[in-house]
Amino acid sequence: MNLIKVGQDAHGKAIELHYCDYGQGDPIVLIHGWPLSAASWEYQLAELPLHNKRVVAYDRRGFGYSDKPWDGYDYDTLADDLKAVLDTLDLQNVTLVGFSMGGGEVARYMSRHNGARVSRVMFVSAVTPYLLKTDDNPNGVDKSTFDDMIENLGKDRPGFLSDFGKKFYGAGLISKPVSQATLDWSLSLALPASPRATTACVKAWSETDFRGDLATIKVPAVFIHGSSDKTVPLENSAEQAVKLVPNAQLVVYDGEPHGLNVTAQDRLNRDILTFVSGQPVSEDFSEGETVADRDDSDNRSAY
Image 1 (tube, rainbow, N blue to C red):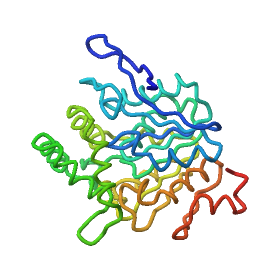
Image 2: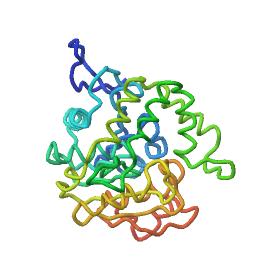
Image 3: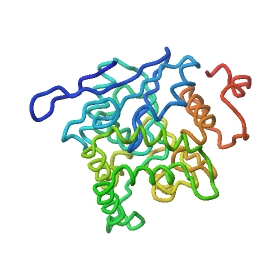
């Protein structure tokens, strides 16, 4: 199993993160969302390395196959963990892709570590810039919403995460964007996380202000978000975040939910490859279009 040491716990024991590393070429580092693991990038890990790209994804501390210490679930520590991954693998000219909570790691890394080794950043369904409602962020979400999440996780973590998954993928009585098997698979990725990490990270992504971090980003940036995201609503996140990053692009996936890395896998894969190639991400996408279709277009040389 591939492991990277990122620090020590309170008892001096090494903390190690599990990662996967596929393909060759300019590196793309995928940072997963809450409450899942790197395996949630399944459709990106299967496709992106086919296009002359090196793709790295790791389990955040407390999740997946990574170690599960009691502490270290603040964004400064999580950004330092990301730095350890980039440094240990000696990655250069990196494109960081942060999904949901992972967008916070991207933002904090870029300010805390001056964007070292990074050439581009992509935020997908990200929690940036600041979700919590405060006096200077009146359009945020009431703290009681996040407090209820933590309370319900404490009462019945499996039950809460099962219900959360349906909202995550936009599943309802009528809407069936993913199969029951996919919901079951997603739950199976969430349950191995430590209860401590699961609740501590809710506080981290709901209460951390990334507005200052985003303002430090000088490399090309794109925000991708679903218009039907009920987990991290577009108007509270990407629509605000894009204003804080010079020359950043916002691309809205019409009708897509939070988990668009699954529900819009072909479009997201295409857009990641387009962005890595240095081209603007297209806001148009034909139903049924795949990366292979784009490879036959005039953009083929970019891949």
